[in-house]
Amino acid sequence: MSARMGIAEGQSQGDPLPSWNDGPAKAAVLRFVRDTTDKSSPKYVEPADRIATFDQDGTLWTEHPLYGQAAFALARVGEMAPTHPEWKQKEPFKTVLSRDYAAMAKFTEADWLEIAAVTHSGMSTDEFVGLVKAWITTAKAPRFDRLYTDLVFQPMLEVMQYLRANGFRTYIVTGGGQEFVRAYSERVYGVPPEQVVGSSIVTTYVNTGDKPVLMREPKPFFIDDGPGKVVGINMFIGKRPQAAFGNSGTGVGLKSGDAQMLEWAQAGDGARLMMLVLHDDAKREYAYGPATGLPDTTVGTFSEALLLEATKNAWIVISMKNDWKRIFAFDV
Image (cartoon, rainbow, N blue to C red):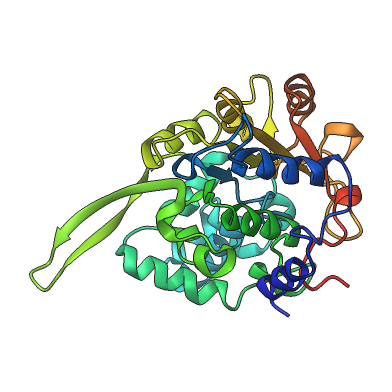
């Protein structure tokens, strides 16, 4: 049964969020939709202004042990290696080719940028999207031995569907690559590519004489992370969201992650909904923080600083373990 079939079945029985346990988190979503769509409510929002933004990695699908796009990049290194014999002695490619996953877990941002520069550029946008589509339909996450697109969180799919059914436009605002996510966003999330805001690399228009193409260059253009998410929302959406969903934030000042996106949503007038997913279910998915004493991680960190900000601002923290009846569509 597909994720969308699961949504339709649950909603046909009268509960728009059948994969959620009853509790404050589920009640907050239902109350928010009721307040913003009831014309008699003082918090009513006109349909044109009903906007909800969602981070992707860790908020809409599993991000451990590596972000999906990182796994794609590593696969590309393997495919490209025969034409780059120098990589056998050059880092970070040497580590990737040796499949030393413990060492890869310690890669710096500079390491990943170098890998992305060679695996995501030197081709047209159409070629790149074709590569992503081919990979995403066959690549499997190691722990579950399932497609990455099977590891989408069913409760979040239900929230997106419920919001859209009530006149909201749902946007994905991700630190991941914009063109990468656009390759599958409509099929997987029901979000059209024009409603995906993400990080991007420099792209140039080239007329080859045959037909014009957009060529991807090996340098970053825009990083849609931390404060950059708010800048991206303003550039690509042009309106402040009424609701924002995330899962991560690291360090003092929360310079990366989703905190600023939630702050931006909350700063508007009227009804607002800010929610953070806490990965605290090692049995059904993963458990990491280090907030609430969970294991620390460099992937999708939910820091103590983020938890303090959530508490201070009355943001709702979703416990995977307690708030979700099931995590994936394939869960019994």
